[in-house]
Length: 239
Length: 194
Image (cartoon, rainbow over all chains, first blue to last red; front, side, top):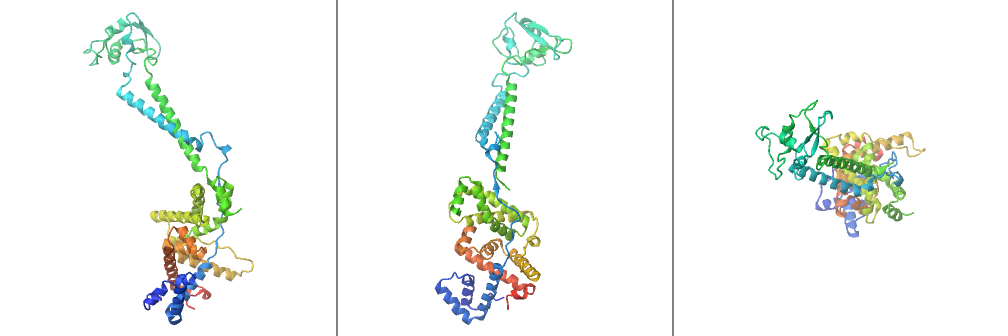
């Protein structure tokens, strides 16, 4: 190796040889290098080997491309209704639907809508005396009817209902919770098992159905959003 | 149609205009990637990534040399691939080097001996380039293999002119030292100490 040999001037010249080869030195530095090279054999050899290296690098052959790298974009007519452009409305729609679902679930959990487990809203508790309610077995057979008085009688005392709660309320005809009611009518057996209240789902707010419907909407929107994002990524590709 | 117009039309979404630019620079980009990565498959991936990124980012191109801009994207793509290869230790660069074996016959008049000589020389230089640190290798390839000016190299690497000069000087010196150590393997007409 030649590097490291010589005087400080050699080191300075060695640092400028690359630019000298490329003819990028100022006139002043160029003449400095040329004057030094006339007297310093080591630096001259260094220049020769460096110049040969650069010449060899110029001879590195260019390799042809194995294939074309041109890009292709699908024509707009091929774009589906839920293509990349639909992301503008899909994202906010998914967000809104998700927020609605969360609000519904939290409200349900906190019982904001007065929803009791099993029976909606205690409607039958407000049923006027004399009005009948249709009760049915789980199979739909052996339907039977009951008046408000009968229902009230069917509700056992709180202590008999296995600790069932009695709701504090202002209704004098049926001041009991749905849980107590269910415990009470369990003795009114139809042909095939205990009766349930027919039209139970139609009574009060169908919160569960709303939750399920919103959940399905959220899932559908999220799926479409993922699809649209993938479409956008695929949108530009290499041929 | 000149380059400025092609760039302008590409910015307004004209894919055909952009593809004319791709055809103009794909050889340069692929060769840079091949020398940087030493592997044809990885070079293809890097070239593909480069032009896809360039197409997506063409709106942000603020003028100047499109060649330097696209080479900068290519250099970044190569750095990313090398970083991933290092992290997962997929395969060493020395191994990859052996895969560069695509040298075409220059012309019909080239003798088989000359072709072999040229091929051996190319292989030897590739090996030398692979032994350079990444930043020096990039500058040496851009300047000495692809013939870019210092200014273009500075733009393509996002470095100052002084940094380019320094890296080029160190890269050439290191490569020269590598070749000197293995001079007996070089064809006699290419020996450095003649």
